[in-house]
Structures are given as C-alpha cells and as structure tokens.
Image 1: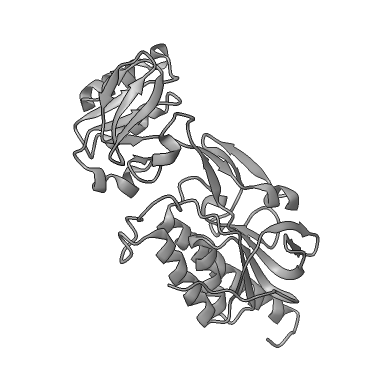
Image 2 (image 1 turned 120 degrees about the vertical axis):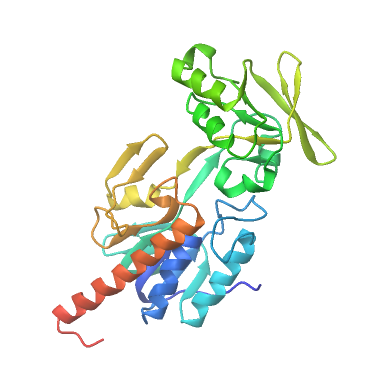
Length: 315
C-alpha cells in the first residue's frame, strides 16, 4: 500500500485531527464523507507498530497494523481529506494549530487522537521481543500463542489479574513475581491462582533467554532458568495529554493513567475539542478506537451543521 501525503497544509480547516491512527483516520473518514475540509496531522508513531498483526477486528483479523493504516490513508484521500506527516506543537486560542514544521493553520473543531506510549519493564530482552513473543493483551495475541508455556512478568499486584486472564489460553502459566513481594498477594489472589493452576515463582527476573530468534526461557537473578515460550507483560501506559492540558481540558486519574474527562462522543470539557482512541483511555483497542473516531466525526459534523444553520450561513 502507498502512503498518502498532501504537502504543506494551508489556511482554515473545519476540523484538524491530531493523530493518524485508527481513531484519527476513522474520524477523518466520516468527516471527509460529510464534505468537511479536514486535515490529519500524523507524527507517525502508532502504538501497535511493534506488532506484526492485529486481531479481533471483524474482516481485518490478522492484518498488519502498517497495512491497516496505509489503507485508511488511501480511503480518506478519496474524500479530499488532507494528511501531513508532522507534529502539532501548539494549539492556541481560536484553535490556531502550529506544526513542528513551522506552519500554522486554523480549525473550527479539534480531534485529539495522539494515543499513548507503552513504557516497558526494564528487563533485558523485553523491549527487543515486544510484539513478538513478549506480549501484553490476550485478546490481541492469545490465540496465536495458545497452549504454549506462558510466563507473566509481575510489576504490580494487578499482574495477578493478567495471569488469571491468560490461563484461558494455556494451562501452563507461571507468574514471575519479579518486583512484587509474596506478601503483597491477598488470600483471594492465592486461591484464584491455585484454582487456575498458575504457578507462582518469587524472585527478580534478570533477563529473557532467546535462542534461534525465539523466546525459550526466563532467567532469575538467582541463576535459575524457567523454560517459557511466551511472556505476558503489563506496560506502564503514558498518555500523550500535552495538547489537552494546554487547551485546559479536565483530566482524571485512573488506575491506568491520567486521561481526559469526556462524554460518550469523546467531547472533552473544552468546547470544540474531542479526544478519541487511546487519547481518552487505555482499553481502546483498534476496533474500539475506530468506533470512537466514527462517533466523534459524526457528532462534529452534526454540530457544525446546526451551528451554521443557527448563524444563517449557507454551507
């Protein structure tokens, strides 16, 4: 698939979409089909770039994230949506949007689809294998590694939940407590882990063992090695909320990061500003993100239409 670029953006747009992932492109598609002059500013940093494939998206199951985004860029171009590879560095009052390349454009409405960054545990081998045999989401990758020997790398007591969940895909699961003390596990944790057949191994993990470009084990700092074929980790999500903070959007603390307060359509507490995809929450997988973008795009089009009619403007 070829990428779509539009050169230098100029002038005033009805909507500027910040971020060209599933959520941003979905919003742009709806807006383009609604005949709204729309600009997508994409920094080219999709969260799922390390993954070779994405799953659970009806009719797109198994497609590579790169191909999915390339098709999306082609589709929005059919409806006159402009896309530029750049980064938004400032959004001033009146929605004056400044790009890293130096250009400033204006918008009537803003969609923030900047996503989040996954901060991985600093265990040698984790970053290098992430998206392959080091994974985090059983719904995204569980089927592909089903019935293999799983490890779960604990970083907080919440990792118990992850170990219990992945036991649905394999009956050979080991929870490596790593930086979590045994005393931090509750009686309910221990009871459920035992019921699920999950083995619990205390001690800090030193590194992953790799042979022939595949994960073969987990080595502890005490020198013992446990054969494993897939390792589940829980990255620390870092939401990209800089622009939302700059705009004065209200944020809220959650167990998985700080995200904007939004209504069911993604509208933030700042009039005219929507947040979609992982910019509004951790659990927005590709299919959810696309849905959120669609809702936001349709809502924005309707709002602009009514605003123009109320102002007596012929569109």
